[in-house]
Amino acid sequence: MFRWLNLLLVFSFIKYSETTTVGNILIHVTGQKAENATLPCDIEARDIFHVILTSQSKNILVCENEECKTENSRVFKKGSCDIIIKDLIYSDAGKYILKVHYNNTPESQIRTYHLQIHDEISVKKGEDLKLDVLLINADKVERNSSEGWTEVWTRGHGVNSDRLTDRDGNLTINEFTANDTGTYRVLDSEGETLITVTVTESRTDSDSPGERKDDTEHTAVYWFWGVGLPVILLVLVGAIVFVVIKKHRRRNNLYSQPSHQSTEESEGLY
Image (tube, rainbow, N blue to C red; front, side, top):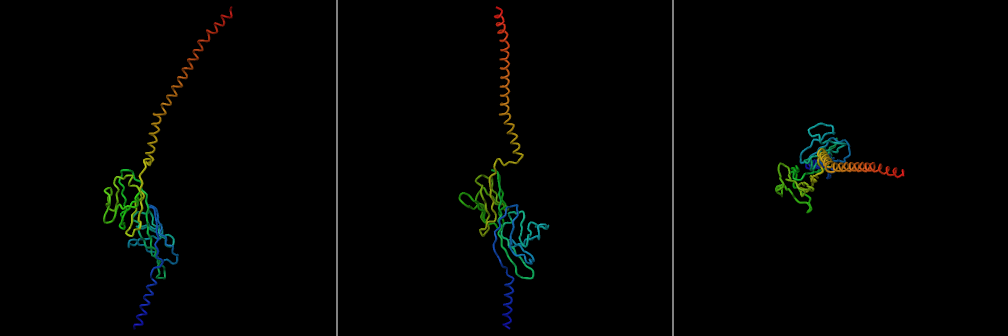
């Protein structure tokens, strides 16, 4: 009896070992906000039954292709099991687990990803900058300055400056100045980077095309009245003076010529 029980236990152990996952590796992926990111599986396409994608212990619906129309059509499968996430947003950042199951076998493959999202923002001086980066898995926010990385927000403690506001998942920089420029990064509890945002100050010459057109027109008008018109008037006055002098000299020549001829004629008679 005990012998059969031991055999049953051994068989159960072997069966459990066959269903365990293999090939569990961590893959770092970086994507630009509003663009696409690919979670590559690099698994041989042999009778794949289905894939399961999870993030923060929640299953994510994966479309079979890009054309499918579902509630979450931003995530779809490409090729054998690559996962594409379209139109990235900040909340997409974090860890993902992909399980690939095969037909006719209990074996499965697993891949773990860490998705980091990068963004670039330009802000005008004096404006408020609102960053919706305080995700549920965010632990701290740091800024890269001349002194290195310094904390500007920490979960449980909030912001470290009166010019910063923590409200509704947003980190707001009030009345933006040149000193606020730099790179901000959001870290999770394990020290992994979730989001990096490069913040720059808007240049004054980066106005809209309409504003640049108005400035060009104003400059042209100013140049005409301030420079062009005086030059034109100066040229006209010079031309008039030249014509007057020319006429005056011609008139003098006409008056002096008859008296000279009459003198010669009178001398010739004697």
